[in-house]
Length: 104
Image 1 (tube, rainbow, N blue to C red):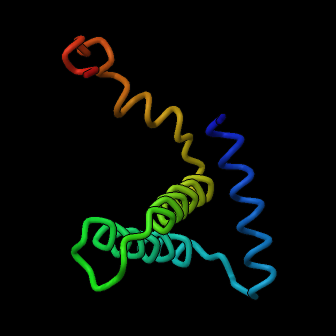
Image 2: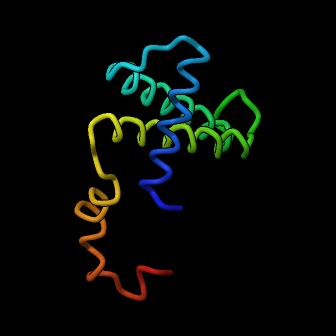
């Protein structure tokens, strides 16, 4: 998956969702929605690890991870953040330090 293409597609789908549900996608809404989705991921994680009254549901865990990723992409899109470049600068700069032990 190309990250920039996925981000653009998520943006389009979010616009459809907003149109269907009469939502104004303000900066605040995008960031607060990301927080809401993180809360739902936390709930799914707690259920998955047996620390909730809810039954474990691997499908819910994956779905909430997808929601968090999508909403992070939406925030990045809104603020013109190139996520691939940000990952490169923040995380992948440590590639030269990877050892075989780190890969196991």
